[in-house]
Image (cartoon, rainbow, N blue to C red; front, side, top):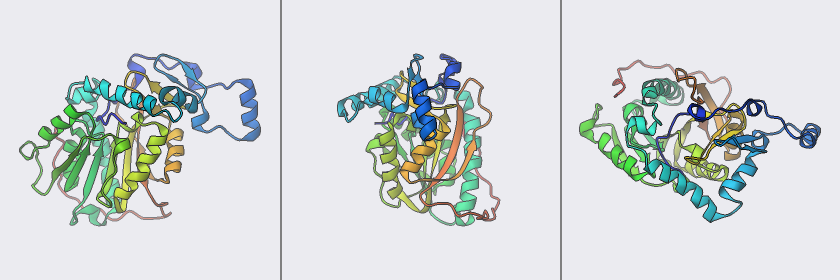
Length: 321
């Protein structure tokens, strides 16, 4: 079960220093020789550590300890602890961004540029003239929906298992609190964790997943995306925006989440049957935070040499602060 928060952006950097030995991991000699003789190690086989500084040989070792091996009770405890953490956080922008509310503008600006590029390339006339729908996963208080998605999509559904966040989102996204036309609305509010959610078939043009997938164990990550594919319209895609570890992974024991490396994500995408259509680094965040990357993911292999469709300029409402 995912906390479903519009999750905390900060890395552990403000209270936890990643040691140099993790940034340049060393394998035990026997394992290193075996790896060199056979094949390069995958990111899931590379070591990581947790917020107490404990080292793990690989992701499998960490997951066995945290969620067990087929132990449903232990996995439920992992998810419940994550939910409990976020139930103690205030339903504000500063709260859901872990005390870094001041990065909201930079976050939305970069996401909007990324979304504009995708819409221009993937949808005729950038989606104008058709009814387009998005799902905001880990929507929290509706921060991303209010400041971005609802300005581009006619309907946005919100998925969030932390109940007081979702209730705040209902208020924030009430028609009287929005600066968009009546053709744009927050349609459905689902108080359901990611790993238990199955979307309606072919409802969404874009499924936006930001700062919440770190709460899913690898097997639930894969099963979520496989189920969620059903919810995409033909030509639809996922956008995943997430913190990135330099290598391997970093486990936050406080909120029960994992920060994966770029290569770790790419291995999971492959297991999900997803293809990277486009990716981009977030810029303008404080140095003490994790790097953040945006991925546009499709269910079909992108064709080489596609030229972007011409964009038509239009006036969009400004960011709502």
